[in-house]
Image 1: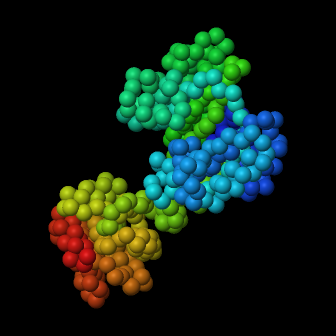
Image 2: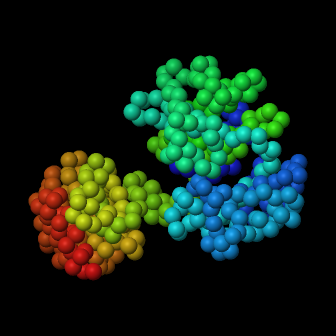
Image 3: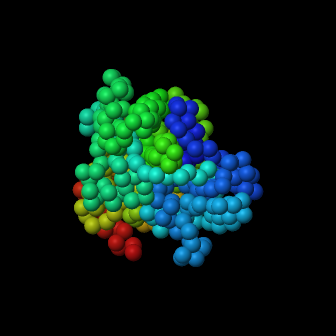
Length: 399
């Protein structure tokens, strides 16, 4: 689960991270009011969307030479004008694709006199079973270019969660950032506070870009991007309350209500599968046959008829879907339950695209008999390879 920048900073501040003063705003009036609470004379108005690259982003509704989603303002009148430009308009960044995201929230924060920008992030390194703290002296908007062109300027420090954050980890961060004196001590403290926040709230990823050194010798978390492990949110109701469903794909929000793992993709063949590994294999074999999957959808091992029906509706809610491949191995799940759900959903939504179903496992013959006697134009497949070939051929034929 992702959260907005201002929410991330509020979380980090609770653990002692140095965060500049700022306030969220939902309207132009609130933005001006927020700026009035700040010391000034420089204010920063930031679009709040779940995507990076906001500073270099472009608004669809504004002129091509208009400023991006992070703007400096030298007066309350400029705050008002910038807020009016952003709110309600669509910001396109390198991470949003061409569709962009509508800006519904702003973050108005105090300006900072920046002497140097650094990069610091944390993530779970699943290969080592440790937490990786990634740091660079080259912070700012072009960190991706740094990673591509000069990877030697990025260093990784791994921390064993059983050991926890130790002083030598902090010293390694400060050394990597080439900080000395008081800044060295500040870097150690910042790294420690970020690690404690990461572990205590079950974060998956924390990115501070930039971490800045001000002209008066202070380190500040100037921007922050945070995502949490969704499987842990039952332990953190306060974190779950920060969820902004307007930033998520509506189909993915609907899927979460039924505990379905759904991710929209760019293809035209919808997939409904039980088991993440089988779902990945299904998508691979669709591509092997010259087509592209429209989604990843794992109904899980113990899906009910209602859950399968919901999954089917979610797939069909995507107008890009030109055909559906159902691939079920009934271990815990019974094939006749899947068949019931498919039939119910197909009748309810008035199925108008080709449907190929491959069933195997518990009660497979009962499931096949139900589909065969349903009166619906369902194409049966013998195995996964056969299923992929048939759905690709059906979609091409219908085109």
